[in-house]
Image (cartoon, rainbow over all chains, first blue to last red):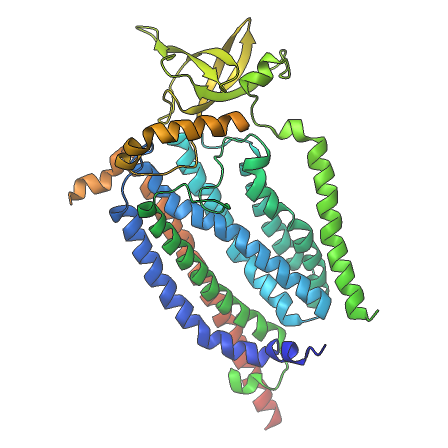
Length: 243
Length: 150
Length: 57
């Protein structure tokens, strides 16, 4: 099997150009979708039969929680590809994911805490779901700290990639924690092999917000990855034209 | 094997190894990961009597009683198999109501569970009030079936 | 629509608006940080190019 196409796509000048032309599309589309979903979720969607208007926190909490896990999987896959194929661009992509993922994880924890206070009656409990999501934040922070501790980028890439791969086990644990153990957090409403447990009028803005966040991630990762590429390709000739 | 295939095997081995090790570890500590005991577990003596525990279940319909002139409430926690009577003094969370899931932390005092803290557990269903009204009988049945299986 | 009622969020105003405000803050931070990360790398690369040109001339 020939991998030339793969290596060509992963060539830094090629990726730098493609990301540069993709980013504005991601950016504007995400801005439009997030604004639409915010209006829809805050104004148009009906209040919940149990939680009233308090349930509207769902529209920022669930998408950020979803993105915290999605970003980690992207980061771990990129790290794995970087290890196996020795592709610097893949390692750079993993490095670009980490701060974005960490910020989404923090947001999921913070909005969850704010939501938990009035509804559950507590800001925080050490149940399996909340604890494993907190562990995810530490995995992101540990990954970034590990990268920063090496002077040699190649060694930083390899060591942090192993950490990213080891930590990926936490993602299914977060997702299934609410089914495997008794937790204060309720089971999944949407990501299950069944009809969603959310009324359609409430589900539409949630989907819009998730797609909006996803595009936003695409924008942020493109920008950061372009920065990573420039930093790594210090002496390459193609830079003379690109910069 | 080419070096690339060797690296591929290494990566797969790392992920699989960590996965298997974690599975064993989580199985071994399964009891500690449970956030609360069900009334059935309490009746079967699975919950330790010496230290504070959490009991989770549904507030039985019609069981909630407030002592006049005080913050004390009593209610019955049920998992449709067993019941635990609970007494609690303090502020209840917004979602606390009959028929809803709650988790109480405290200890057994004879047959009565004296709670120091009561948290409301909400389910994964979101809907407007009109839809909830039209679904009421169906939803109650679905909820009770779901609780019994867990 | 009643604007006052909207901002009150059925009594959950503090919780709902704090959540949305925090989300806006984090998204803005990400936007700023990603932009800065790219721009800094671009400036550094440009400077290296200029230095290389000076040296070669």
